[in-house]
Image 1: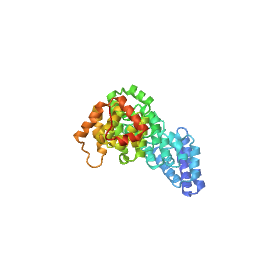
Image 2: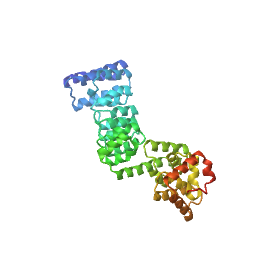
Image 3: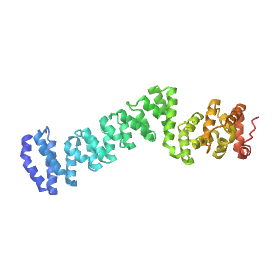
Length: 375
C-alpha cells in the first residue's frame, strides 16, 4: 500500500497542478482509490500529503469532483475525515449520507456543521446512530423544534441536564416534542412536573406512574404553569382576544377552574379573570364585567357562591378584584362587610337561579346592581 501510494504521488501532484476540471476529476478518482483499498493505512507523512491534495482538490467546489467522490464513496463511512468534513458542509443532498454515517467526523466537526450550516444539516446529525452530550447540546440550542424532536426520539443520543432543561422549556409550546421528551431516560422529576399541565391526559398518567408525582407536586406544578403562562402574556393582559386564547388553552388542558382564580388576580390579569368567570358560569362577558365591577361586591358574591367557592377564597377574590378599579383601590371595610353578608345569605342553588335570571334578562343586573334581593 505504502509503496503504491509513493508511486502514485507524483502523478497526483501533477494532476493537482494542472487545475483543469478533467484533471481534478481524475485526481478525485485516484485519491478515492487510495482510501478504498483493503487494508489501506497511511503513515503521518502520507496522510499529510494526501490531505494537502484533498484541500487543493476541494477548494474550487467543482460539482463534477464532488460527484466523483460521492460515487466512489458510496459507502460514506469509508470517506476520510478531511474530505468528509468538507463535503459535510456542502448542500444537504451531498452532505446527508456523510453526516448520518461517517464515523471519522469528530464531535467538534459535527458541532461546527450545526453552528455554520442549515437546520437540515442539523436534523441529519440529530438522527446519527450515536450523538454525544456535547453535540446534543449544540443541536437543541439551535431553537429548531424539529431538530429537538429528532434528538428526543433518538435513543442513541445522550442528553445533558442542560439539554433536558432547554427542551422542557420548548415543549411547552411544541406538542410534537412533549411525548418523546417525557419518555426519555434522562427526564427528571422536576422537568416532568414542569411539563405536567402542558401534556395530554395519557402522558399525565404515564408521568404519575413513572415519577410517582404526588398531589402537592401537582398543585405546585399548576401554580408554576400559570405563572409562566401569564408572564409570557404580561404585555397583552388587557387584550380580550389574546386573553380569550389563553382561556381556551387553560380549558383544553383542564386547568380552567375556580381554583386558579386567586392566582390569576394576584398576577394582575383582571381581563382573564373576567373571561374565566364568564366561561365557568355561562354568563356573557359584558354581564360578567358588570357583576365583577359592581359596588358592594354583592353580584360577585352571587357568582362565587354559584361556583361553590369557599368563603375564605371569596374574600381573597373580592379584595384582589378591586385592583382592577381605576384610581383608589383600597377596599372600605363597609364594602367588604356588605359583600360577606351577601355571601352568607346565599345558597349555591339560589346563586345559580340568580345567574339564570341575569342570563335571560341582563337588565335585571344592570337596574338592580346596588339593590339585589337575596331572600
